[in-house]
Image 1: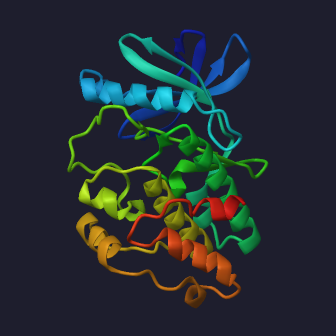
Image 2 (image 1 turned 30 degrees about the vertical axis):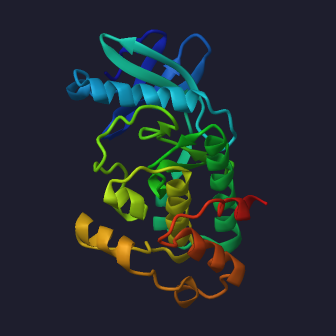
Length: 260
């Protein structure tokens, strides 16, 4: 699609591809701004559940207006393909930043606070992300967090789009409830934020395995190595908060400890 014009958006380059969408960088020729366009893959277009999940993402993200959440501008259809027009974020993913070297404690704390603030806004509107991970957290050129990919977002009270017993998410960041295929709520995002925080402060994931089932076992049955053993200078209160997010029993408001 590179070089094509969809509505008034000129496709410039492909940015990435995931299970629920292909993302392109584009120029809004009317407003003269750079945007991101996310298309449902052609192979999935004929599947009602995939289309419906894509619509859920659009409705969920469009309901959010927060500094730390990627803004949705429009949802439309092109040649029977649904697409979302989103804010284009110039920067890097948190995963890329972690992989480039250990993040300073103060900076990592600010990134964690910003992520918690964005999630807090979503949870206030009864929206659960369900796939929080360092790859889904962008850091723009000003150092501001932008949460992306509400692909798996589920509005509370809406009919479940996946059969009970089906897992949605990314294995190392999944909550115990997700590994079991159980119903989830905002506490799953709090768990996943805890995994991201552990990863930011230590440079490694708390739960590991060579294949998904091994990771699920670790999540369900093992405790992560204490952060203070992996890195000096970790404040005791910060370690306590991260440990609380990773308790096997879901917690209610741990994320508020960061933002208060």
